[in-house]
Length: 368
Image (cartoon, rainbow, N blue to C red; front, side, top):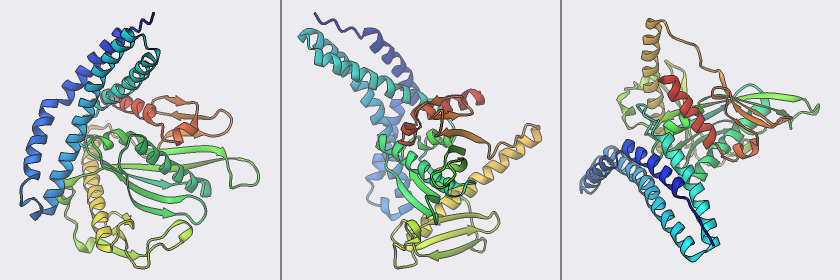
């Protein structure tokens, strides 16, 4: 006789989910969606494209967030029904399906629980991620491309849309840098713990001596911010260069000078965009990222000044935060949290949730 009893497990899921639901504030979400839907339905909405973009983006984000919560609630209800049916029909296949759904729900609820820890000023926003190769020659540029693929595969696993904004290919292997946008709710809060210096140790595929090679890449994560236009950038402070978009190995993929590089002369910040169809679109996209970086720089300088006055400023920028070992022990280790994964291949294939969750919990504990 089949006796499938998941009562305690389902009760535990409901308790955790109830706490999550209270933090997310579903009623407030629904009120926001109703208000934004009304704004989006105004005939004059697109008379102001910037405001229209803000409204439609905010509406999409809140609808997506509400769907994640309501879907989990529905799945927990469905799981209880599936368990009852499995026991009534003595159906082992249904029992197996119920156990699989329980495991999947536990993982989903755990991810939602981590999201409730994301209460920073910009955590709910989308993210713009930039990866740059560091020391290590061809191994470093190859490593930078491995990291880019890792994050794109992570986004794909979660069905998050990704917009690649710029890619600078190396003359040899890999990439010098790449910038892409993941504009979904909480992408910034989630991925911001990935910012820092990443280190790869392996037997180099580019050398002939079979020696271990250590290489580095930097990951920068900034939020997608509508209010970035608050930063006023005089035209005299910007140098604009236009060039042809290129592919791997320097191959030209565009017959017109549509790619744009903006250099902010006072700070030296450089932003390149080449993946839009026109020079005007690339310039607008580059300007948005530049404005965001300058706004964040201003806020960081203000925060640093406060810390300096308080005597607690620390120089932590550039410290490596994670190591990837592809020889001998085969290990990925986060040096902040101590979290380890014994199969680097799965990490590079986008299985980052454990590392990210550990990072978010570590940051929350550190801040508290």
